[in-house]
Length: 57
Image (cartoon, rainbow, N blue to C red; front, top):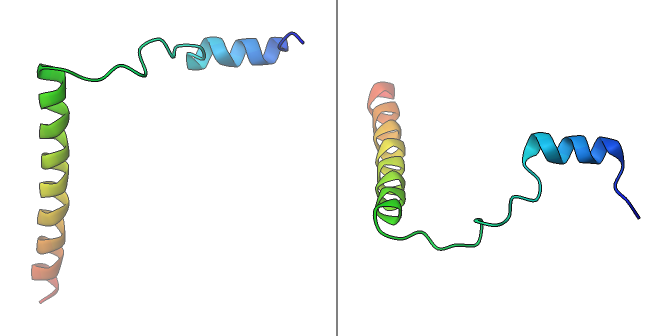
């Protein structure tokens, strides 16, 4: 079966079929930046929770 024209338009807008690079492992600087981002995310939430606790007391 052929996909409908609406489905073709959705794939064109959303980038459907762009799975070429989705399964590659991040290396080098990109992997480092991902780790730094996760650490900063955790620190942000911890600091946010601490500030909420301190402001309520």
